[in-house]
Length: 120
Length: 106
Image 1 (cartoon, rainbow over the protein chains, first blue to last red):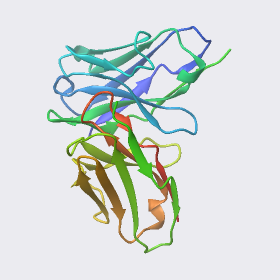
Image 2 (cartoon, helix red, strand yellow):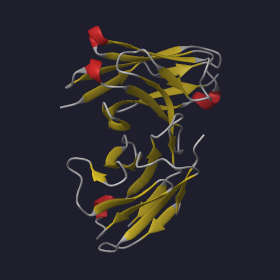
Image 3 (cartoon, each protein chain N blue to C red):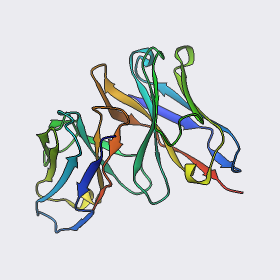
């Protein structure tokens, strides 16, 4: 069974930093692209960032480019999102997702989410 | 960026009725289109990928169709557990983009 478990969320002041982690299990982590998707309170879904299976390529939404960094560690089957220069509009539930397969980047599996609140 | 316009934003229907949700892309996305169901406080659940392919375990009353710019999700014979918000997603080109969502009330 595919499982994705996020951690690292919390309350942070504007301008601060936070690092989200996602531990994956139930599949061969090194063969799937991984992604972060967020949802602000009461709002819709927003893709944040993606990383290819090898970690060679990364992609970011314009809203987070230059402030967020996605990375992965095959040894621990972990996905990370380093979030710097946080702003109030970064407040959201952040979901770790796995792509469907090697041919499709559709977000097939989701974690339970980690709440990040940016407030003074 | 590819914009995804989803309609209606909300719909109210009765048990047993059939509803249709549409998603229009600002440019062609081939069949790189998925539909999700999200219930309050939960992560989204993948229903349909490749525009019309069922995800494992999804009831057959959920049907997806379309290609390039126009897509539909049809729910045949609504059930009480179908009350949720539904989103489309294009995964053809970065940045991947979601529709604004359709809240289904039963």
